[in-house]
Image (cartoon, rainbow, N blue to C red; front, top):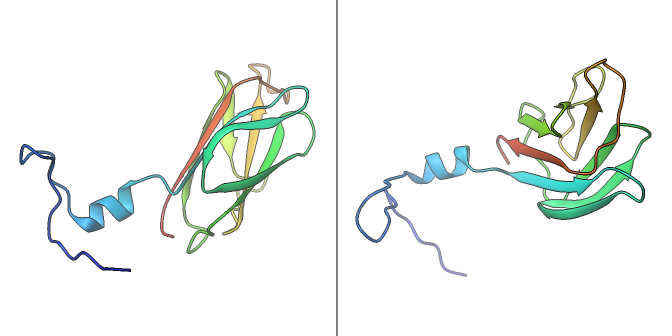
Length: 121
């Protein structure tokens, strides 16, 4: 395999300049869109190898390539209150959790849920 070393990346017109560090630090390291109702299933994903249904409104995802540390950012959206992490807010390098609540604060399954991770890998 070859290695390409550059200082800057640009589009074909010379715009949208980015450094390799910006690309490495700024791009999503994992993302998933999934159905959280009935027979739960991943609709599409990047760097997610599997999912687990851990009860109403609780899901866990195994990463194909682990994060470098547990100091990453996880964001979830379900058209309701959603979060990444677990009840203690702690993260692991190999699995991330998604929790969905309704407006009353009760756990809830949703048919379309998204989650994305940013951080070091």
